[in-house]
Length: 218
Figure 1 (cartoon, rainbow, N blue to C red):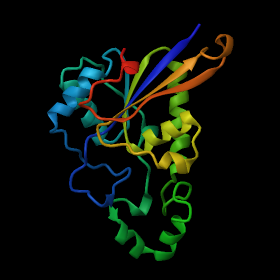
Figure 2 (figure 1 turned 30 degrees about the vertical axis):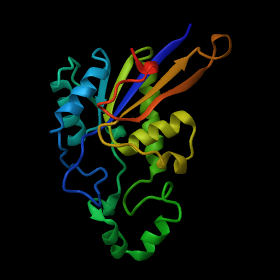
Figure 3 (figure 1 turned 180 degrees about the horizontal axis):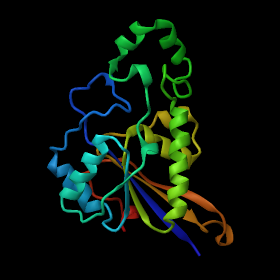
């Protein structure tokens, strides 16, 4: 028997007034004025899914805007482990400000940016680890269901890196735009003689207003 658990990852809406700044896990507001984008997401996402967001305002506002666009979906559960990367003392600073704050620490960070942590923050490798914990737990808990996760660029990259077995460096290179849709399927019993598990990638950085590929249709 083959059991498929479908993950639908949506990055939150754009964050205004933070261009060129690293907002990370800071609780900043997002812009939910793009009604066409939310209508597009509402048409594509499953209504009978398990919904989950991070604890940050921008994911809660994004999930509410999708539901407000006509999708009769349940209230999301809040899962802090799918939060954006914590950049510690560098949050809400520009790159120039980070370097000026401590040039030696800044230079050392860029020796291995996917594995090093900013001062008082966490690394992207850490994000992969905690995101993977959530994926494993929810996939087991809700096996065979659709799961919609409204979260962040960092945690979506972390999910893709974990599922596809990528290094942190390769995962960090994936582009995840705001309001993009990203789809992973966990398949249990889909390998040789119906045994074993694997992941199937169906979409990365899919724009909210574009039709679903045939392979993603419910």
